[in-house]
Image 1 (cartoon, helix red, strand yellow):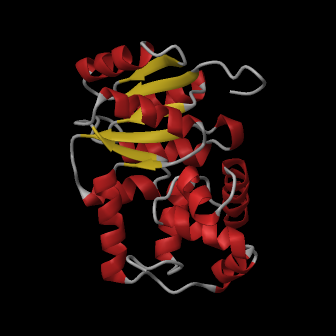
Image 2: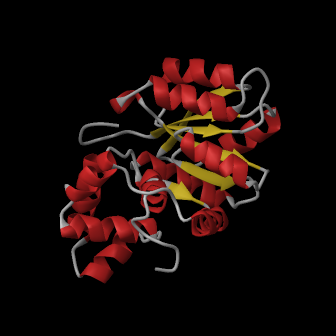
Length: 230
């Protein structure tokens, strides 16, 4: 997806149920800006096809034979870097915290339940293709609640140095991102243009060594940059 005409968003489907993959394909390929480039029935196939087809987004089931979706996500996000690394969207029928946390720490950029709407799926693919992260609202609330109970670990020396490198504005942006604010909402809160906010978000992520907004949320709560309700 480079140049003035980026072309369609390339999507790989990974699910061990053929009917589920067919349903996803039908939903996505109706959209003129989305192209399904492959289907995988297990995690091993997902990893191999990711390398072979170079998708922009991988839709990943959790429970699959031979290699589960969380292991496959770690293989994909850990083995590919830069433009070759796709965003992974975890899709599951299991509304479980352990899956959510494991998926995010495995490098997934988003998490949605399969009982969502077709429109939500299409929107999620487009959001991840733009390099942003996405969480369904209910899992996001539970992430915050978990950090509220644990308090998060103390900020280490290396992390403190990264945080000190942020400008005051970038720190404000980090806090707002951690609260789930969109670029438009951040722009309204800080009285900035959306293009300026996008620049601040990109610089903040780069300085902290984070891939996307989802990682920024985890980072902010784990390091005590923001407290739930604060």
